[in-house]
Length: 275
Ligand code: ATR
Image (tube, rainbow, N blue to C red):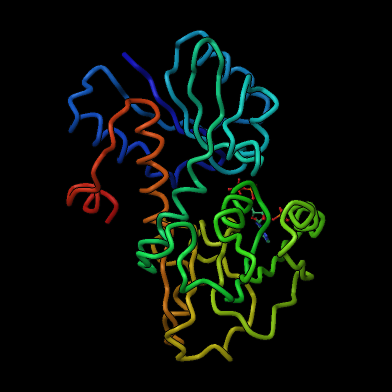
């Protein structure tokens, strides 16, 4: 059997096995199986060894290991190196390589959300926008990297301010705010924290002055649960909302393609599996 895994902690919320096993069946890869495994930091080295020893073919990496896995890898692809964030592992010529498919998964989601035939890198609709990002964890650099544009202003705040300041060193357009502060105006608010993975968790920020503005987008990277309190409050105010499902699927397409050379389809069954 060819074994694939998603590793993280917590991992219960991950729907990756559902999607990848569906595609494996659909594309007749009957010798392949994809599982989830809750791991501790001390087990990362061994996971990489299992890939090196061909016991596992491919791995997706999620919270909180996207950066922590890096020291154990033999090589990083360009985006993983730039963002210092890895979500996909695969062995190429005896080397366990860390890839980042989150960045392109998010960029593609933005291009789908704001279709723009003239600008394939960053949709024109995002130019000059004030973007407010909550969190500075392993995935946040992928989001900043894909929104990076000289005319976009990115405000960033994180409970541990030092991590936000580290990101600013790499991305000059970022302005770091204190935890508890928010910019006076923002067009897009993106939650990259894990607050909301558990049903009743709440991000305590007052966005009431954004009320009924359909042009304001509240985007949560979390896709399970489908509607976090952050998104629910925005929807009730009348703002535009989107959860992380599309990005999740887009990054999964890129990972599946790396492992199998097949570009899988988001068919009705995939959507049904996620509902
Ligand atoms: P990932 O790899 O998915 O980004 P991570 O690196 O563990 O996961 O990042 C989780 C993010 O959620 C971080 O920004 C974290 O803030 P800290 O850097 O201060 O730890 C944020 N986060 C998690 N729980 C939080 C909480 N209760 N309050 C505020 N921020 C929280």
